[in-house]
Amino acid sequence: MRRIEWHDTIDSTMRRAAELAREGCPAGTVVAARMQTAGQGRLGRMWDSRPGGLYFTIVLRPRLEPAQVPLATLALGLAVADTLQTFAGVAVDLRWPNDVLIGDRKLAGILAQFQDGALLAGIGLNVNQREFPPELEPLATSLWRETGSEQNPEFLLPALARSIESHLNILETSGAAAILRLFESASSYVSGRRVTVELPAGSITGTTAGLTAEGFLLVRRDDGSLVTVTAGGVRPAG
Image (cartoon, rainbow, N blue to C red; front, side, top):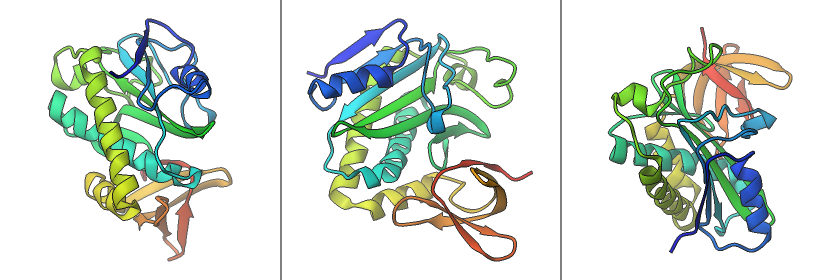
Protein backbone atom coordinates (compact mmCIF):
# COMPACT_ATOMS: atom_id res chain seq x y z
CA MET A 1 0.00 0.00 0.00
CA ARG A 2 1.50 3.33 -1.07
CA ARG A 3 1.93 5.94 1.64
CA ILE A 4 0.44 9.26 0.55
CA GLU A 5 0.68 12.17 2.96
CA TRP A 6 -1.83 14.85 1.95
CA HIS A 7 -1.64 18.47 3.09
CA ASP A 8 -4.11 21.26 2.42
CA THR A 9 -1.20 23.69 2.71
CA ILE A 10 2.52 23.07 3.15
CA ASP A 11 5.64 25.15 2.62
CA SER A 12 7.20 22.65 0.21
CA THR A 13 6.45 19.01 -0.56
CA MET A 14 10.11 18.65 -1.57
CA ARG A 15 11.28 19.70 1.90
CA ARG A 16 8.90 17.30 3.65
CA ALA A 17 9.77 14.42 1.28
CA ALA A 18 13.49 14.98 1.97
CA GLU A 19 12.71 14.72 5.68
CA LEU A 20 10.90 11.42 5.16
CA ALA A 21 13.71 10.13 2.92
CA ARG A 22 16.25 10.84 5.67
CA GLU A 23 14.04 8.85 8.06
CA GLY A 24 14.19 5.89 5.66
CA CYS A 25 10.65 5.94 4.26
CA PRO A 26 9.90 3.26 1.64
CA ALA A 27 10.28 3.97 -2.07
CA GLY A 28 7.03 5.23 -3.56
CA THR A 29 6.13 7.43 -0.56
CA VAL A 30 4.35 10.60 -1.72
CA VAL A 31 3.90 14.00 -0.09
CA ALA A 32 1.10 15.93 -1.80
CA ALA A 33 -0.50 19.32 -1.26
CA ARG A 34 -3.30 21.45 -2.62
CA MET A 35 -1.25 24.59 -1.99
CA GLN A 36 2.41 25.38 -1.25
CA THR A 37 3.70 28.57 0.33
CA ALA A 38 7.32 28.02 -0.77
CA GLY A 39 7.15 25.70 -3.78
CA GLN A 40 10.51 25.01 -5.39
CA GLY A 41 11.28 25.33 -9.08
CA ARG A 42 14.48 24.75 -11.03
CA LEU A 43 17.58 26.89 -10.52
CA GLY A 44 16.35 28.10 -7.14
CA ARG A 45 13.20 29.69 -8.53
CA MET A 46 9.81 29.68 -6.80
CA TRP A 47 6.94 27.64 -8.27
CA ASP A 48 3.56 29.38 -8.16
CA SER A 49 1.51 26.99 -6.01
CA ARG A 50 -1.88 28.55 -5.50
CA PRO A 51 -5.03 26.51 -4.76
CA GLY A 52 -6.39 24.53 -7.71
CA GLY A 53 -3.16 22.75 -8.55
CA LEU A 54 -1.61 19.43 -7.57
CA TYR A 55 1.81 19.67 -5.98
CA PHE A 56 3.65 16.55 -4.91
CA THR A 57 7.03 14.90 -4.39
CA ILE A 58 7.58 11.17 -4.63
CA VAL A 59 10.52 9.51 -2.87
CA LEU A 60 12.22 6.99 -5.18
CA ARG A 61 15.19 4.71 -4.66
CA PRO A 62 16.19 3.70 -8.20
CA ARG A 63 19.50 2.11 -9.12
CA LEU A 64 20.74 5.34 -10.66
CA GLU A 65 23.69 7.64 -10.07
CA PRO A 66 23.37 11.36 -9.24
CA ALA A 67 24.86 12.10 -12.69
CA GLN A 68 21.72 10.54 -14.21
CA VAL A 69 19.38 13.18 -12.77
CA PRO A 70 19.04 14.90 -16.20
CA LEU A 71 17.87 11.59 -17.71
CA ALA A 72 15.54 10.99 -14.76
CA THR A 73 14.04 14.45 -15.37
CA LEU A 74 13.28 13.49 -18.98
CA ALA A 75 11.67 10.24 -17.78
CA LEU A 76 9.48 12.21 -15.37
CA GLY A 77 8.26 14.46 -18.18
CA LEU A 78 7.31 11.41 -20.22
CA ALA A 79 5.49 9.94 -17.22
CA VAL A 80 3.40 13.09 -16.77
CA ALA A 81 2.66 13.29 -20.51
CA ASP A 82 1.45 9.67 -20.64
CA THR A 83 -0.78 10.09 -17.60
CA LEU A 84 -2.40 13.28 -18.86
CA GLN A 85 -3.07 11.70 -22.25
CA THR A 86 -4.66 8.64 -20.64
CA PHE A 87 -6.61 10.18 -17.77
CA ALA A 88 -7.38 13.72 -18.93
CA GLY A 89 -7.37 13.23 -22.70
CA VAL A 90 -4.90 16.05 -23.36
CA ALA A 91 -1.87 15.83 -25.63
CA VAL A 92 1.11 17.76 -24.34
CA ASP A 93 4.51 18.87 -25.58
CA LEU A 94 7.71 18.50 -23.56
CA ARG A 95 10.21 21.35 -23.47
CA TRP A 96 13.71 20.39 -22.39
CA PRO A 97 14.46 19.86 -19.62
CA ASN A 98 11.42 19.97 -17.35
CA ASP A 99 8.38 21.77 -18.77
CA VAL A 100 5.10 20.13 -19.76
CA LEU A 101 3.26 22.36 -22.23
CA ILE A 102 0.03 22.66 -24.12
CA GLY A 103 0.87 24.85 -27.11
CA ASP A 104 3.30 27.43 -25.70
CA ARG A 105 1.72 27.51 -22.24
CA LYS A 106 3.09 25.71 -19.23
CA LEU A 107 0.88 23.05 -17.65
CA ALA A 108 3.38 21.38 -15.32
CA GLY A 109 6.93 21.67 -14.10
CA ILE A 110 9.33 19.04 -12.78
CA LEU A 111 12.16 19.14 -10.27
CA ALA A 112 14.35 16.08 -9.65
CA GLN A 113 17.20 15.91 -7.17
CA PHE A 114 19.22 13.29 -5.34
CA GLN A 115 19.28 13.69 -1.57
CA ASP A 116 20.40 11.29 1.16
CA GLY A 117 20.53 8.38 -1.28
CA ALA A 118 17.01 8.95 -2.63
CA LEU A 119 15.72 10.54 -5.82
CA LEU A 120 13.10 13.17 -4.98
CA ALA A 121 10.77 13.78 -7.93
CA GLY A 122 8.70 16.93 -7.54
CA ILE A 123 5.78 17.76 -9.84
CA GLY A 124 3.68 20.92 -9.95
CA LEU A 125 0.60 20.45 -12.13
CA ASN A 126 -1.99 23.13 -12.90
CA VAL A 127 -5.27 21.27 -12.53
CA ASN A 128 -8.34 23.40 -11.77
CA GLN A 129 -6.99 26.96 -11.87
CA ARG A 130 -9.25 29.29 -13.81
CA GLU A 131 -6.98 32.30 -13.65
CA PHE A 132 -3.34 33.13 -13.00
CA PRO A 133 -1.55 36.23 -11.75
CA PRO A 134 -0.98 38.81 -14.51
CA GLU A 135 2.70 37.93 -14.98
CA LEU A 136 1.85 34.24 -15.57
CA GLU A 137 -1.36 34.74 -17.54
CA PRO A 138 0.32 34.61 -21.00
CA LEU A 139 2.57 31.72 -19.99
CA ALA A 140 0.43 29.22 -18.04
CA THR A 141 -2.58 27.01 -18.56
CA SER A 142 -4.47 24.37 -16.57
CA LEU A 143 -6.37 21.17 -17.24
CA TRP A 144 -9.60 23.03 -16.52
CA ARG A 145 -8.77 25.67 -19.11
CA GLU A 146 -7.90 23.05 -21.71
CA THR A 147 -10.78 20.62 -21.11
CA GLY A 148 -13.50 22.81 -19.62
CA SER A 149 -14.04 20.34 -16.81
CA GLU A 150 -12.82 19.91 -13.24
CA GLN A 151 -10.33 17.13 -12.57
CA ASN A 152 -9.90 15.31 -9.28
CA PRO A 153 -6.28 15.64 -8.06
CA GLU A 154 -6.73 12.67 -5.73
CA PHE A 155 -7.62 10.52 -8.75
CA LEU A 156 -4.71 11.81 -10.84
CA LEU A 157 -2.07 11.42 -8.15
CA PRO A 158 -1.83 7.58 -7.92
CA ALA A 159 -1.82 7.33 -11.72
CA LEU A 160 1.02 9.86 -11.93
CA ALA A 161 2.99 8.01 -9.24
CA ARG A 162 2.62 4.68 -11.06
CA SER A 163 3.66 6.22 -14.36
CA ILE A 164 6.71 7.85 -12.77
CA GLU A 165 7.84 4.52 -11.33
CA SER A 166 7.35 2.70 -14.63
CA HIS A 167 9.26 5.32 -16.66
CA LEU A 168 12.15 5.33 -14.21
CA ASN A 169 12.14 1.55 -14.50
CA ILE A 170 12.62 1.95 -18.27
CA LEU A 171 15.68 4.10 -17.54
CA GLU A 172 17.02 1.53 -15.05
CA THR A 173 16.45 -1.55 -17.18
CA SER A 174 16.73 -0.33 -20.78
CA GLY A 175 19.18 2.51 -20.25
CA ALA A 176 19.52 6.10 -21.39
CA ALA A 177 18.99 5.40 -25.09
CA ALA A 178 15.41 4.22 -24.51
CA ILE A 179 14.44 7.37 -22.58
CA LEU A 180 16.20 9.63 -25.08
CA ARG A 181 14.29 8.02 -27.98
CA LEU A 182 10.96 8.42 -26.20
CA PHE A 183 11.67 12.03 -25.27
CA GLU A 184 12.79 12.91 -28.79
CA SER A 185 9.49 11.63 -30.20
CA ALA A 186 7.40 13.37 -27.51
CA SER A 187 9.05 16.81 -27.74
CA SER A 188 8.95 19.39 -30.50
CA TYR A 189 11.92 21.13 -28.89
CA VAL A 190 14.63 18.48 -29.25
CA SER A 191 15.55 18.90 -32.90
CA GLY A 192 15.10 21.55 -35.57
CA ARG A 193 13.51 24.16 -33.28
CA ARG A 194 14.70 27.76 -33.25
CA VAL A 195 15.23 28.64 -29.60
CA THR A 196 16.79 31.18 -27.31
CA VAL A 197 18.49 29.69 -24.26
CA GLU A 198 19.11 31.74 -21.13
CA LEU A 199 22.51 30.72 -19.75
CA PRO A 200 24.37 32.05 -16.70
CA ALA A 201 26.77 33.90 -19.01
CA GLY A 202 23.99 35.33 -21.20
CA SER A 203 21.57 34.10 -23.83
CA ILE A 204 22.27 32.23 -27.06
CA THR A 205 20.05 31.68 -30.08
CA GLY A 206 20.21 28.76 -32.45
CA THR A 207 18.51 25.60 -33.65
CA THR A 208 18.16 22.53 -31.45
CA ALA A 209 20.20 19.57 -32.66
CA GLY A 210 19.24 16.66 -30.42
CA LEU A 211 20.27 15.37 -27.01
CA THR A 212 23.56 14.07 -25.66
CA ALA A 213 23.85 10.60 -24.12
CA GLU A 214 23.64 12.29 -20.70
CA GLY A 215 20.35 14.00 -21.53
CA PHE A 216 21.68 17.50 -22.26
CA LEU A 217 20.40 19.68 -25.11
CA LEU A 218 22.51 20.44 -28.19
CA VAL A 219 22.00 23.81 -29.85
CA ARG A 220 23.69 24.78 -33.12
CA ARG A 221 24.34 28.50 -33.22
CA ASP A 222 24.01 30.48 -36.41
CA ASP A 223 27.81 30.52 -36.82
CA GLY A 224 27.74 26.70 -36.98
CA SER A 225 29.19 26.07 -33.51
CA LEU A 226 27.53 23.42 -31.36
CA VAL A 227 26.72 24.26 -27.73
CA THR A 228 25.88 21.65 -25.09
CA VAL A 229 23.28 23.15 -22.74
CA THR A 230 23.51 21.52 -19.30
CA ALA A 231 21.16 23.98 -17.56
CA GLY A 232 19.19 26.93 -18.77
CA GLY A 233 15.79 28.27 -19.71
CA VAL A 234 14.69 27.38 -23.25
CA ARG A 235 12.08 29.37 -25.15
CA PRO A 236 11.06 29.74 -28.79
CA ALA A 237 13.23 32.30 -30.57
CA GLY A 238 11.26 35.33 -31.53
